[in-house]
Each structure stands twice: as structure tokens, then as C-alpha cells.
Amino acid sequence: MEKIPLLVIVGPTASGKTALSVECAVEFDGEIVSADSMQIYKGMSVATAKPTIEEMKGIKHHLIDFLDFNEKYSVANYVEDASKAIESIYSNGKLPVLVGGTGLYVDSLVNNIKFIEVETDYSLREELTEKLEKIGAEKMLEELTEFDSATAEKLHPNNKKRIIRAFEVYKLTGKTMSELEAESKSVPSHYNPIFIGISFRNREKLYERINKRVDVMLENGLLEEAKEYYNLSKDVTSSQAIGYKELKPYFDGEISLETAVENLKLSTRHYAKRQLTWFNKNRRIEWFYFDEYSSAEEFCQAVKDYVKKVL
Image 1 (cartoon, rainbow, N blue to C red):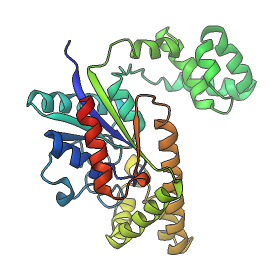
Image 2: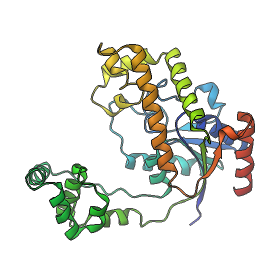
Image 3: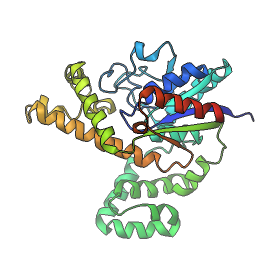
């Protein structure tokens, strides 16, 4: 089977993925597929830093701004939709460019993870929960080791939900979590990916960009957008976007705006660290450090020169 070439651009929030992906799409006649778990929702443009029409430079973007805020959307849904978009782009003679900071979306798509849906049995879950509370998580993990040692080794006693789920899946399917995980990875990937990662040698430079981005978001109407979405969607995933949940205590009169903004900057910096931790596990990524270049133009050119050599 012919594998589809796929340029994958990843990195932490505020690192410059959007600008780089557009420059690469222009250079290599591509279209962009977003791998951002919050940019999928309609509206939410300020909080999720969706590219503007000007920033897109005429490049077609897929999987941005297409889902109502109260709709559920799983990783499996994303893999299905992104796969279709990539196949369509490639069949039209263009280069698919996957860009985003949601590592689970990127890995699940590129590695062709097949998600096996297991229905929830709430009476069984309640029974297992009561058992865990009675005998303790350590004892439950010991029992899990008897039939699924691979999963048990990965789980901490504090991760009670996953311990219960491991028992639940086995009782409902007759297969262990580790067996299902192996099955999910049994089909080879459809893609020949070129991974580009954006990072900073000096982490403080990234944090400065994050702080500045938050200030710009506030200037662009983040407060008004956050208030509107919080009132509409208190109990759904979209209301948990960074930029919304940190402002809730301010809307509720619990803290000052200044404190809320500082909390938002801190949350975003922590998120960037988690993203880098995730992507650093991927040995296929060719890292480019933004702060090693004298300008954004020089940085983009270095990436494009590399892609030309390996594409």
C-alpha cells in the first residue's frame, strides 16, 4: 500500500506552529489539518488562538470551527475525520500538513490507533467501586496483576478510575486492557510522516511569548468571549478550554481580574510544559529551536530547507 506523505508540525502553545504551518503549506502546495482539541469548536476563536483569515494566507484549513460547543467528540472521532481530510488532500495532489499541540490526536492519527469501544455497565462499575473502597486500591491492583499484569504495572494505586475500568473491560469483553491496546496498534500506519517540532533552548523565551499572547487575547475580547461561553456551556468539554476556566472565579466575584489573568498565564505555561513532555517522547521529531535564529523568517526558511531534503 502506498503511504501518504504527511508533514507533521508540533510543539507547545504559543511556539509559532500556525505561522510555520502556513509558510510550509504555501511552499509545498499543501493544505492544513488541525490537531487541536479545542479549535474544533465553533466560536471560541480568541481563547483557542484560531488562525485568522489573514494568517491563513489563502491556505485551506480542515477540522477547525466545525463543532457546536455542546457536542461530544472523541479521539476516535478525530482520527476518522482527520484521516478522511488527509486522504482528500492527497488525492487532490496536495501535501497534507498536520499541525497542532494535542499530542493524543497526533499520535493516534499518525500511528493508526484503532479505538475499540467498550460500553459502560454502570451497575458493574458501581459493584467494582464498592469493592475497591472495601479492600483498597493496592489489593485491587494485586488482583488485576493475576490476569493483566501489563496494565497493572502501569497503574498507580491513586488512579482508581483506571483500575476499575481495567476490571470492567475484562469482565465485559473477556479481553484485558493490554490485549485491546495491542489490537489497536495491529494495523500499520497509512502515513509516511515527517515530524517537525518547535521548541526553545531558553524556556523563559517561550514563557514570555505565552504571557504576551494572553495579554493580546485580552485586548482581542477574551473576557467577553469567555463569559458568553461559560454561561452557555458550564458542564461541557468546551468550557474547560484554557482561558475560560481560569476566568470563572473572576466572573463569580471570588478573585480580582489581575489574579485571574496571572492564573491564566500560569496554567498556559504549565500546559506548554506538559505538551513538551509528551512530544519529547517521540524520537522521530526533528526539533528546531526558535530562539537560535535571528528572525522568524530565518527560522521558517531553515525548516523549509530541511523538509525539501527529506520530502
